[in-house]
Amino acid sequence: MMRVESKRRARALQMLYALELVPGFDGDDASTGLARLTGPEPGVFEDACTLVDGVIAQRDQLDELAQAAATNWRLDRIGSVERNILRLAIHELMVGVTPPKAVIDEAIWLAQRFAGPKAPSFINGVLDRVARDLRVL
Image (cartoon, rainbow, N blue to C red; front, side):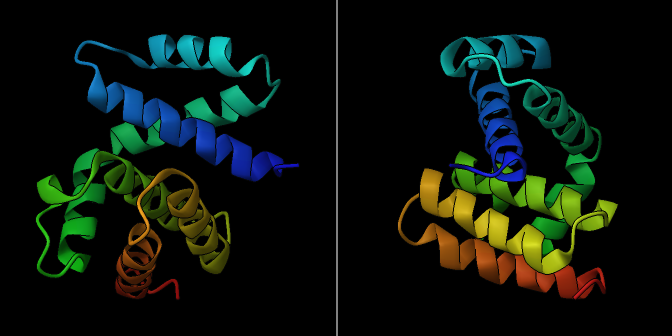
């Protein structure tokens, strides 16, 4: 069984992906559509929406941090899933509620579950550098 914290991050990632993929889609549309697919998850969607709102509010800053840490990669060349995993994790690193190692471990787990085979090591490397740049690791 998936932990609640992992589930809320997975749902937030799925919403961020939908928002990026479908022009004109908003957070309510993404949340409603995802809830129809996964069934009701009390508390999970509310927490996921809070994460999504935080990522959207800081997206430019999150992208700048990811770009600076993704040596030799332009952010627009990184896959949408990987880019949104980075945004989500960097947001959590900046908020500082969850321990940095837990944030990175969860991001790696998301990459293993939702992205390609090379994504986990890429995500780990970028987030390690971002965490060091933010002086949280």
